[in-house]
Length: 539
Image (cartoon, rainbow, N blue to C red; front, side, top):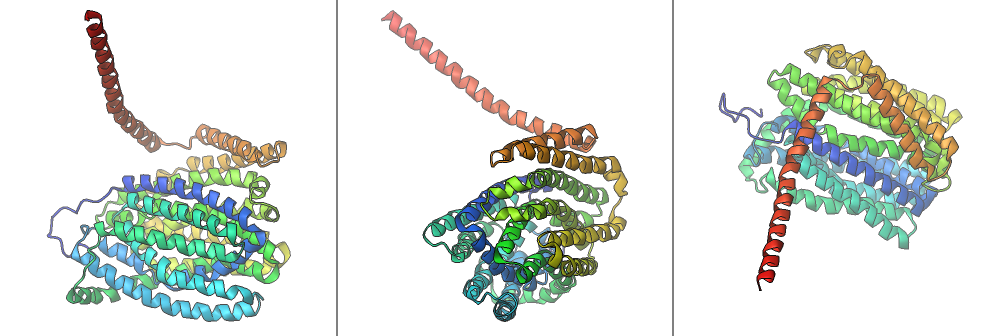
């Protein structure tokens, strides 16, 4: 469909390159992860472990609604408009019908979730006082967050990393500011609810302005009808992937529900904060890979097998390398990290050791899933996700009552491992070259050993400096050990060194004009002073 309106042989419209989108994705990751950590620390200390636990239960239905209110129509939209020029009438047509369908489905799903919440919070969770903030959160998702999600699909399709960076930065800063402002005067779970909805609302305005560069704001009735003709085809793609996405979400959120049934609110709060750190890292890493999907779609449709392989494998390599570095530090200094949040959170330190690894595993599974979508195998991703769900739920029931916060962590990692293995086997036929050629075993082994070295270094440093200040020394020791082992064992390959050389070259070229301008300004200043001095002497 994307190519139907283009003349045969005509060039594809210009859009940002994957490298540019990836670069802004890295910036978005750093900004979102850094400010997200600040947000987590500030809200934990301001609200305390009990309110954090209540918010975890309040937000769980919203997370469920996020899964139930989509048939992956946004991914189908991205697949369709990849290749169209910005503000093309076709872009507006498809976005309008997808957004209309998404809004209607979200309203229906919200009614279902609201009914289940009435039963659950009055029943096994025994928390009826949380129903008002739950319903307000659900309404906020329907009106605001779902709209943001649809607009982000347009940015992703056009590899608009720059716009996404500023929008996400805005939203992250806003949630910190609102949470602190409300929390100072109102020590309640309502402060976090208001902050979440308020930040989403202000960033919606930002998105609505920025998206005008890609979508025309006006649409005629005939154009809308033309878009409706395409909707069934879009839904056929999305419906195949939907069961898998629901299964993945249940697998990831199931731990909070399981603990909510068998443990106290403070335990739920401690686990939710231990989980929130790696979750924020995972969400931040999605800022990098959200431009991967349209890139894979384009390269697969053009028959660029080697380009498909490079984009997929190198994206996974870079993300896993960064995520394992952070995991080594978080896991090694788990007690000190959770101590930053205040009293009561340290009871989940053992869970954080395990949970810190899941963003690295998730970066693999997300890329694998997008690769299968790009080659038009969405149904297979659902079957794999259902297998993960079976493993995760089975282990949740078996381990949570006896192991507490560690049980859900083990169940989550086991589920991710199932997806990595099965998806790896499914993606293999689509690769032009075998994995051992694009990502040799030596490089993968270097990552595993570097993680172990970084974890051990951070753990030993924590024993020497068990304090809040010790987190900094643990991070430094873990990062140095990780980096040293990674380089010594050959973690970098020729492609990496070539890209580093290109990056350094670009930085040097950008500095040269600036240096030349400064030298010219200095020379003019000196010359001016000399003329002034000569004039004074003559007088």
